[in-house]
Length: 62
Length: 265
Image (cartoon, each protein chain N blue to C red):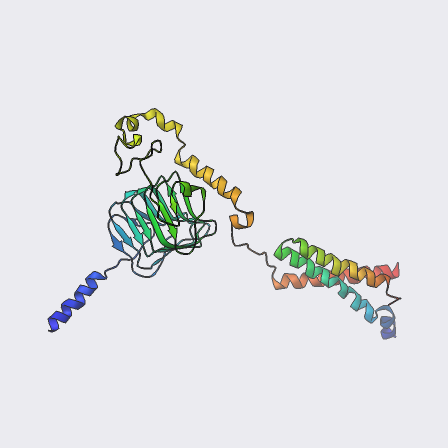
């Protein structure tokens, strides 16, 4: 009984989706340790914001 | 025969006698350093004329960002400095009011300025190798010096009054530079005139040495790009592994909670 409730409440994707936040943590720590650099900032925005946004919008089409 | 061998051995020791360099050492007579590495953050001073300082390939090392001058020659004449390796000072070799001296076969490495001349005349700087952060040589209020490096050419404003990269015949008997060479007389150089040297009012018209140094420092900063100006080792603020782990766990938990809240509301 308990297992069924847990399975309904907690699914695998509930634990996988938060992993998407980790690259942003990597970026934050990298910028803190190496200082701000424009090329890194541009690459980070493209890799971590633009591309995921495009994937999210076009998720059903691709 | 054996006494002859002993005598030969002893004489060789006598010839090769060397001393250890010490921090803040003041040299008043000809010396030769033993070939070793010496940490001398406060540098070494030469204060006597007509002597030879042979470093014997010793390395004189300062504390980067802290040590000011490696080898200081001040108010001396006819001094020879050779076979020195001077590194990690703000100024490797500093000559102030030095004349007719020879600086040769030295290596000045990782200093801000390799060799600096101030109020120095008719010196010979040759066969030195330089790898400085800012300038190989800086000459302030100095004339008639010969400046030649083994590994590079010098092209700076002071080359108008000093011979750079090659020997050049220079006439030190120019009036108005407040320097009277041994080769000049009162007839050939007005600066040798006892009348002029006795006039105290003239001196305030000339900038003090400190002002000239400050001005030169400003010029250097303007001339050089910022990246070359100061090459201090940048300390990276590295986070400990434990802190990084905590950050990632917190980030994960926050994202987890955010997603759950979004799902339920």
